[in-house]
View 1 (cartoon, rainbow, N blue to C red):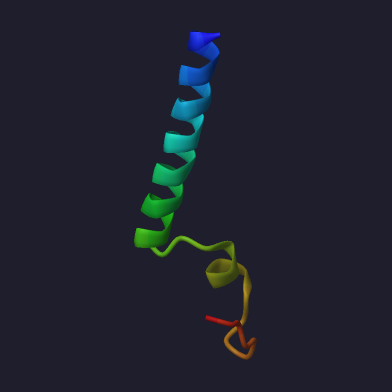
View 2 (cartoon, rainbow, N blue to C red):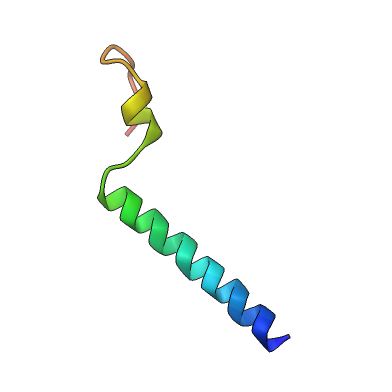
Length: 42
């Protein structure tokens, strides 16, 4: 049980960390797939 809880905590930390890194790098599928005439909300 303890191992499973540690694994869940690790998954959460990895997911949040990956999200922060991708946001910092400005990596968004909307940036790559939209044309200049498309208005995207910020």
